[in-house]
Length: 92
Image 1 (spheres, one colour):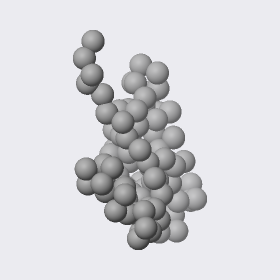
Image 2 (cartoon, one colour):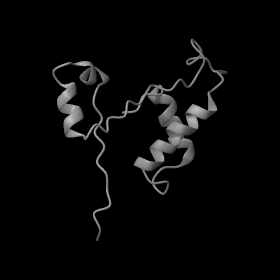
Image 3 (spheres, one colour):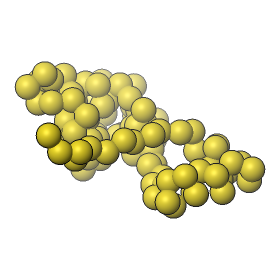
Image 4 (cartoon, helix red, strand yellow):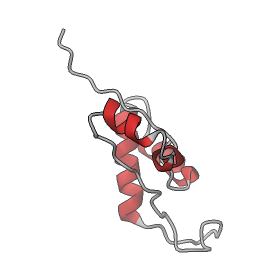
């Protein structure tokens, strides 16, 4: 078997803003830090409305990320969509 895997660490954005921690994080990751923004899923103030219009592009991006973490064989697409919508657009 090959060693073809990646380890992804998720840290609070505040850690990158901490001047004492940032150089250590950058050094230990070979400066491969990628900030993942919160993706808006609804227009402001509409997230709790029954007829809210979703931002389909952002929903699809988050569903794609989720299927990279959890196999499609284990998670139905409708369930994945519900998980993404309940996340509020935050990767955790």
